[in-house]
Image 1 (spheres, helix red, strand yellow):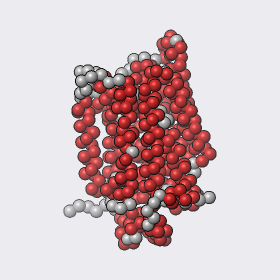
Image 2 (spheres, rainbow, N blue to C red; image 1 turned 180 degrees about the horizontal axis):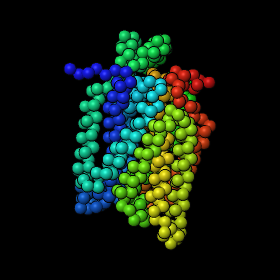
Image 3 (cartoon, rainbow, N blue to C red; image 1 turned 60 degrees about the vertical axis):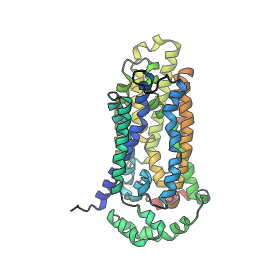
Image 4 (cartoon, rainbow, N blue to C red; image 1 turned 30 degrees about the vertical axis):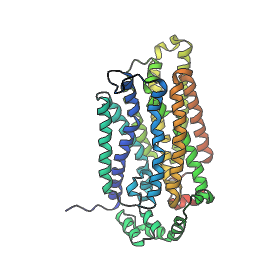
Length: 414
């Protein structure tokens, strides 16, 4: 017989299944950083001709376009078939997590993605093009199997008006104290869910304000420079004249990035989302400025940086720790916290669509222009993006630490 797991243990078990999916996502996001050098090598590339810089740039960023239709399908299905079949990571964790640990559960999404990235750079050096790709396929098969053990979100049952299922789901998750609170607003959720359009995302003040905050933060995150470093690390270290191999450099960088992820999980329920994001964006902006300065001096006179070939690696380590401390994780957290339940899938879908489309255009452009205009121009652009994120956080982002989803809505309505 199987032992029945309930309470916080159940929340943790469900989270672990979802984190497996995020490890696979991290592995996939680092795929191009390892594969691009193989595509440039005629002996390893499965393609019988050499790719142009534009084609190589598209190999690195085309995943952005592929990701755009997915949220619309899953967003539609999540309100019809439930969150479980759609594997909505941040939305599911936000719904099942107790208030006191919800932030930690959401932050660990970033740690899981970083772990997948480390795995990719760790084994990608030793595997062929096909071997690297099939490992990723195997991981997603495991994710599909793990999804069997994920329960349905209590809020889905609220939207369906099934009180008994709501009580059963919350009791199973150890959240009996939230039953009355959730059922007390059931009528509002059910009435809202009967609307078949997206109007309430923009007509309800709290949703409109949440969408504005979440969209801007995610747009800035997707163009803050990390994806360019990840996708085009080979070109960056080649231009920098680094004596350390690209894969080893990226393993070092991403390993330190994991430190940032761990620190974020420690401080998210102590320092709060807003403080963490302010610290993260400030340090990211400073790191990108210094890296741009190095490339500028290198373009003027290589002898000026001859003794500092280690500098880009050190700066990117600092940047990676800073990025994962807040900028990588907090946008995922607030997507899962700010919208009302019935529009969460709509709001997150539209946000991710616009952010990914914008990220695709900027990252592809930067990949093509990196060696044409010089690294200093690209990295100083990222300096400005991170600085804008700092200012936006300071003036617009509300603190959600320790607040229930209903309390967050009250803050957004002010």
